[in-house]
Length: 443
Ligand code: ADP
Image (tube, rainbow, N blue to C red; front, side, top):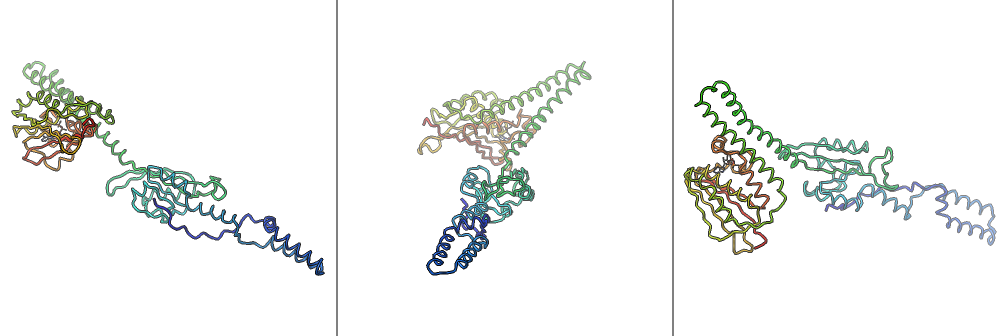
């Protein structure tokens, strides 16, 4: 926590509420004593009463009208109040520390008086006492700060930063009025005692919004192409090819393929949105990876024989239990093996293994590896493979009935299972898609 190490010397405070009456009241015992001594000297030492009365009158006048610097407890109270106006109290600091967003408390001159934990984490070591502009450089934010200091009205502003990466921020700049006579309260015309700057990083939210818009644009584009082709062929069959049965049959076959492409795309989009809906629900059932792999390889045997590829399984265990959703894990295994068959067919072999990871070190983690021996994937594509609609080669993906969503679905399902996907590949050496499952608590 950044605590204030040294507070500035406080200016001498004049006791502003001292009226002549107050001063006399405060010095009443001294005045009574002096008056008693005066009367005693008149009685016992024959000091003339005019002199005694004159001395007392002088004393009362000096006490009532000569201003003094107060050294009383009340001065300390006034001083403390003034200090509180310059440095936030503990209550304010702990409240600001409890906020999850970076938060700065500054005084009306733009000097930082307190910086909360979240701001320290995000902006590094900052020292209270420095101008706010040392840590917050966005001109629009500093201008808003000045406006709040002079108008006392809260403001909300947004700004973007381009370096090191594009980032969006929002800041709430609000005046703070301390209660009581030391602080002003939000009276008309009163300037704020402090200004609170709370910053929110909107980058993640904006990126998600952009992803969603990109997704809708990509999905519409992917659907529009087969739809345009369908419309074109219908018009041809209705017109030029009306009386040409051979051409009509050929066109109907193409139309069937285009309709299939649209259906696959819609199925994948629906699949993605269903998985997204369940993203935060961790699967509870125990499922057997060995059974899932056997089931999937059987189902894909016809495709493997069409592609002239042999599927080899390397499984030494009877069962491999993980917490999961069987249908979703079948979809993962199916997508990975299908990709290996389609894109790695030149290798003529695909191997699938299920193995325990570090079986001697506590609960067992499982790995599922799908490896092909085809052309492989150039390194620059690896980080983007799981993005929606990302393909290394769009034409070959379309020719092989790909939608560009298979690995995005795999990634989403694995996220839900707290499992990790790792891809290893080098051009000409095939590709290995490795899934690491965490140990389940039944082990
Ligand atoms: P698609 O529906 O196009 O297959 P995926 O999301 O499943 O979409 O895969 C994305 C892209 O990754 C594919 O278009 C392909 O270019 C590449 N890819 C996936 N698996 C392999 C593999 N085993 N070998 C080579 N490239 C692959």
